[in-house]
Length: 375
Ligand code: OSB
Ligand code: MG
Image 1 (tube, rainbow, N blue to C red):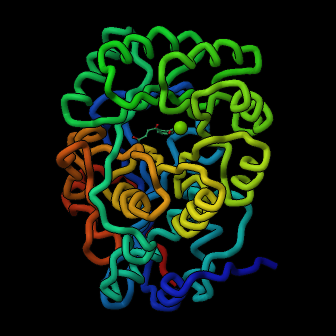
Image 2 (image 1 turned 180 degrees about the horizontal axis):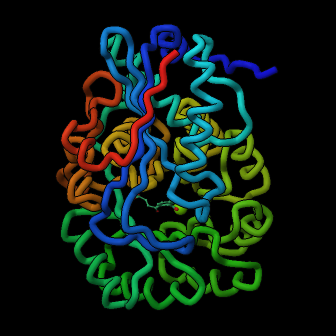
């Protein structure tokens, strides 16, 4: 017999008030293909939830699952299935999301939509609900694997010229020392981070330690996500801070990783950990242990970006996140675009809920299917 998760007050208050839920699929073109160790993407395949109450108030939730199970086991089609068949039935029956194993990205999308609806109904912003300060906050840009060093330098140069003061470069074995050295030489004062998406192995320990002289702000997820021990060995050996991303799916996993010495810094993504509530708890764990934490990103549209920005203003989020302006990702965002402010900053919206909703014309342009589910 399935059990029901105890939901916090805002989410609990809207269950029972829901008229229907739209589960939408969209394909949003990216400005340029995004390449990392797990593959390349030319568009964002988005699962979007619209939860409506009887007064026509709508709460929006974006699922961060990618189009194929190459980066994480979760992926868009699977998440849409889990949302429709395993999470929404309990909500539509009036008792809240059913407790299921895993599927954090699906759960996070449902939580975001319920939170947005509840907060819109009460006129409160997500930033206020999470305990954030509202910004502005310094943000960073991510540059994917590039075909050549020249291409990489062109793209990094563009981001620096736009105002970003922290650049994260994707690396993989064979694409690390040379590109990072070139970026470091071209932009000596930029904070330079490297993200390997788990592509290195034990045999690469020495090659990673050799990056120590580049003055990197951190090396993110060098090894596969289940190998906390190897991250602990590296963190022990290298001076550059070791950051975890894929390895840390919950507050419990975070405590374990800290106990093992497997990380110096955390990349926190609400989608990866099952939602914003768990993410806020994890910021607290990081604070208790003196672990700097920053808000990760997964090429979100304006909906998910609004949520990330709210989270990124919570006390304890001490480093600039993977939060760039809409134009870094999309020619046309789903919402009013986020624009970079002075000093490479962004400000979360301060309206009710997420403070951003999709533009109907953009929704129409990018939607590939809609399913409406009613109690
Ligand atoms: O590893 O942080 C990652 C994008 C998709 C999936 C995983 C990652 C990323 C990024 C891009 O690095 C971050 C962004 O949204 O700017
Ligand atoms: Mg990462």
